[in-house]
Length: 188
Ligand code: AMP
Image (cartoon, rainbow, N blue to C red):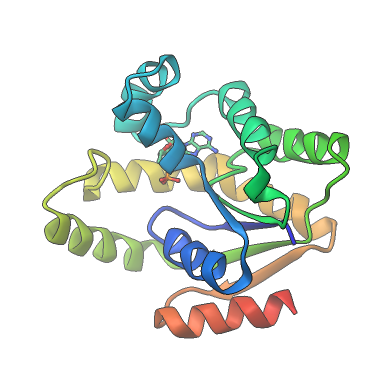
């Protein structure tokens, strides 16, 4: 099963993806994690992405699409994967469809974890306090910029999936276990 976990920054996609990876044996493909690893390793990709990420903007579609296309070919994706943080724009969604078709795969479900902006802002303030600002993009000011990018560039992808009949909307403003149960029910 190949699924996309969709939702704004701080909605808990990463937490849910880790649980689904464990329970369903799927690979967890977080483009944010891949980019942060590239930044840490100071690869060409990392050098290109660093400043963009710190500003809360999106790295170019063709760059991130290439990263995902390579990653999907890895053996751990054979059983299925969870995309977390991708696609984030309409061109990325279209590129995903194309690359999956080329590889003889398809998307089984897109799960939107829906959380209101004001809840996300209070969550990120708590997370930043707990981690001592470990992530350079983890502060309320950057989050507001990232939320604006989400509403402008990422949310418009939802109708694309809705029209294909693969979209499931989950209320993400509740305890982690309840969100997990709702996602699993949607996937059944
Ligand atoms: P995330 O951990 O998914 O919130 O991603 C952290 C940052 O990485 C984002 O704010 C973007 O700058 C960048 N990023 C992650 N995924 C993508 C993507 N699919 N397209 C463009 N930029 C991305």
